[in-house]
Length: 138
Length: 138
Length: 138
Image 1: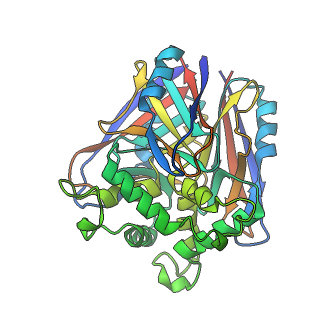
Image 2: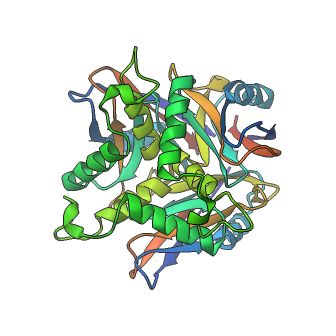
């Protein structure tokens, strides 16, 4: 069994951003030399997500509006978690969008449908944060 | 290490449907000859889900109502993603219900609690779509 | 390849509770002797979750309020699933928070960010329920 580990680092300009990391994950798979196996991609922070959906700016706008409706950033005082911190909404948004994805590796590549793309979802950005890529297989 | 891959195909009659695929996943495990390992079951489309819950029609009705309340299909014009397409709500519904499940295989079977069943959740159907089953183990 | 399996049992005092199970999962990893691999931690019940977030009581209060707003427990009659049962809201809450987490094992330990903690999320408690820990690796 081969195992492979790599951290991807991000520092967004805005509090909330979606970043397509599919190519970076594929590069990890290539570097790992795994032909058949699984790749786990997870946020290492609890105010960020890794998820799979469409690389379409209109949809990302719809996600932002949907998440802000469910768990609005402001007023900060509406959340018990806030006080010293102001990111309760980010914890909730991350929970809706998910922490991680697990994907199949087949013949040395992400085994994906036509439109599947992996995203880093940042909900409390403007600082260094990271994603873990862990691969096991042969 | 053994690896196994199979696609399951679906073509629903309605835009939204929930289909119990537990038996199909168990058949894949049997075919793989894996006794101990993990099975990944994921939608290969970004407007569909794979999730685990109860095989009870009343609950499925409750899920439908819950999802329609959070991300209504209509009016289509409420979403930036729509225009050429009309399925922004399907992308959001899939995100709430999840893309994939990872399950344990123990002694050659799904290692499940009493009421766990795997479902394909279709949110933009009436066309050919598929689910990936990937198994690794020994 | 090593595989390891253990059930963790819970019996909460209240209908809804969040319990930090990170130490129990780490103990499983140690017991498994796996140095590099993946650990799957999943609820074996369809009215409970396993998720990763912050061990902060204020945030847990915010999660409770958020989930009760999206899928209120009462009135029970609002759900088709209820009648003989009264836990439709628990099925929906579990769906929002997720069934399972998959985590990397690196050098014999959970490969976690600073604040990541694993929680058992109970939404229909006051009875015996269990979580599955399945580990594969080397």
